Image 1 (tube, rainbow, N blue to C red):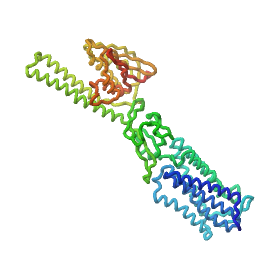
Image 2 (image 1 turned 90 degrees about the horizontal axis):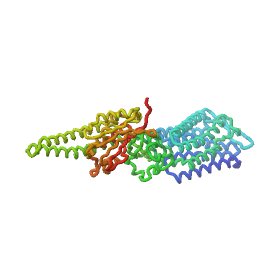
Image 3 (image 1 turned 180 degrees about the horizontal axis):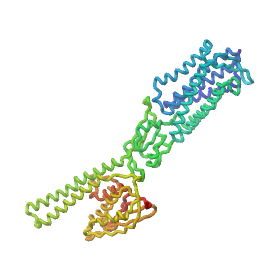
Image 4 (image 1 turned 90 degrees about the vertical axis):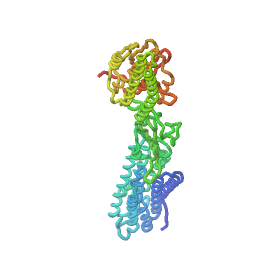
Length: 553
């Protein structure tokens, strides 16, 4: 009997042609590692629909049988190809060992062999006939145990593939959730159609509607491909990125597009990384290849922190580049330690050496009898020695300072702490005034606060060449913050000194005169505050330490 394709065959040929065009477009324009599984999936769909379309063009049972066997043999590969694609999509390449791949392909291959040889054993179907309805005459088998064993396996691995896509979507950004939703929507129609055919509940008796529903499947896959960038930006496995995570993480695809970012990275980086944007939106002046080793500043837990940027490649089990992990590693403590070593080295090498040279010269004058007033010279020696001891104590305090978390902050009465510092402050030839109302602030280290205030007062008095140095300690409160304010009438802080504090680093040509301001700045930060030089000049200096206000418990 002649082959006469009707409307059902034409519909199936249209779906097959659409599948072929989609596979061809993907194959030509994309080179990602996911393309192979994707093309295989679309190719099997196209082959199934084409074969079934040819089958339905025949009216005789014998002529339909050969095409039915081919259709069924090809259809058996759909679940396996779907699972392979889902595993790739979810980043589970390490599961795709050689043994696992062989096992996965073996089942549909064995099923196809049984289908093609079924007339000799009847393992897949036992009897068959032609169902005639108003639409088409179609081959209808009586399924046997082999088919049901295969279909149970097929439904299980399809379900597992769906689980992998859902799990990936739950751990990804909105862009990839839309991808996943479209993929899952593409799976549902053929799955429901196949279940109804298997249980004999097809709306058109005997007709398998599964190939027809692939029209919706291919359309939805196309939407995911061209609207939601499927294959261009496939989710990077979160577990792979977490292997190299530090204190902040931004995951990028191979093109440098942001795939995901954790909460800390979004809080530290300005502007915050947004899924779908290129990383150059966050680092406009630095190329991705040059980001490693750079540092950024950000506030974490209420404390300013320094983060070092490191870029690591993410590769699959086949060593194919899949993306990048941009790690923000908290180096605040390391940087502070290096900074203290730098300052301590400069003080020990420069200041102490100069002081001890003076002591040595004065001692020689006493020893040689050249000193007109040995007692006065000895007093000079004693003064220099006291200065050396004081410096060594400051170095010891410097090594003790540790940054604190805002979570450790407690309400502290700043007036009480400041008053205790002032009353213990030795101001022989200076006038120190204070106005210290009882005001509570969130302080993480009360001892560090006292150290900061003491060093600010010492700096204000010691560097004042006036006959009677003056300083004033006060407290201000406004807009949810409390400020400790130290005013003096000294000569002001030199620009190079302020620059060193602003840059928080010394150079051979720019360094502070002593440890006082350094200790005050570090101690203020360790106490949960922030030191700033409000104003300075020949008429004096104003330094503030700002804390968040706190309610009294």
